[in-house]
Image: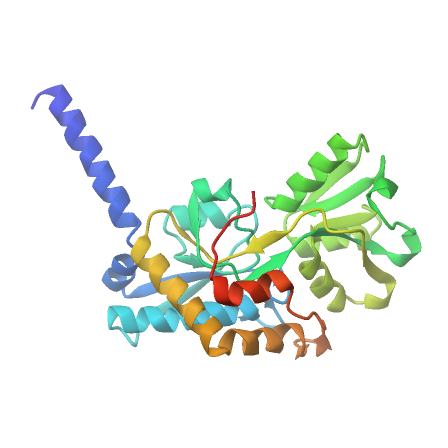
Length: 294
């Protein structure tokens, strides 16, 4: 075979392989297994509550999607695998086929949209600060020259770093491998604040050993949507996932799910976050937008 022809054949083979890898429903049907991701400390979306089984708003969404997949591929006994992921490894594990779906606290933005696709947005949040009340830190200017925690692989780490640079605050950014680690940096006084999505901060604070000693301060730096994450260029699977979320939004099931996790007592301590649905999310109950943050 001519070298050029061989190269063309190889390129075509790689393209076909790539297309096959992006067909999640076929992959699931052929292997008789779907593997879904969970987070260990993204309260109340996906977290461990005193056991090895994750619970949360995004976990319930995941379960509904898995049921729809079982019906779609005609395999009611489909094996369901679960895998803990972090902010740093969630995208690579999705891309290489280790996991098939990630619903947690992942921001849908244009940078990530180059590597993965996102379903309809299911939450809106923004970066704020978790601090000890005794620190007397109330806003971002108070962080000048001080150690500030965030979590590796998050948009929040990028946002707070840029804010520090743009405002000449010379913050010392200290990164935890997951949200529990970042919280511990504040609790152990290795950082004066934890910059993260406000809803995650409220959840972490509610489930901490001493919630009364902590508070969430400062205005949100930006509004970011959360969405389930899928492999790139897989329209059939995206249509299924979007369909599950759209149907839930139309039927009222989504609002009931929101009530369960955001305005009701949640495990493990039975604390109520008392967070009414934002106007952005309420609008998306009819808009069904998957528009990313910029």
